[in-house]
Image (cartoon, rainbow, N blue to C red; front, side, top):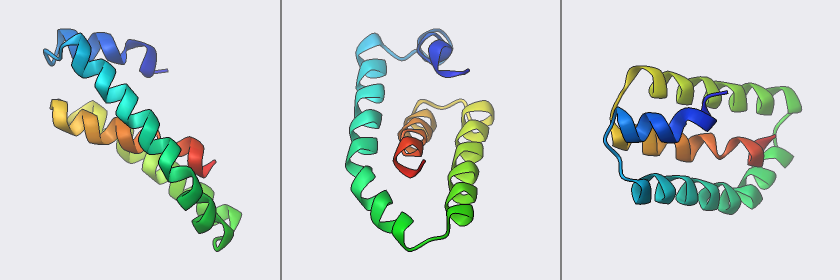
Length: 89
């Protein structure tokens, strides 16, 4: 699992402050919370297989962005998108 160590990586390798890391995870969680009704509406119109494939593709893209694009802003977008997964699953 990547997320237990993500705060350490953000702090030590990308130079993010503790408040920036806290804001990052907080915004990601609230965006995921706000996206839940939208994801539910979209899920009603899609097949379960297509929905799972879309969620898995989003997860893979987020992990690739975290692995190959070491930029604080890219991490912010990837983590915010990653928090959308529970809304879809």
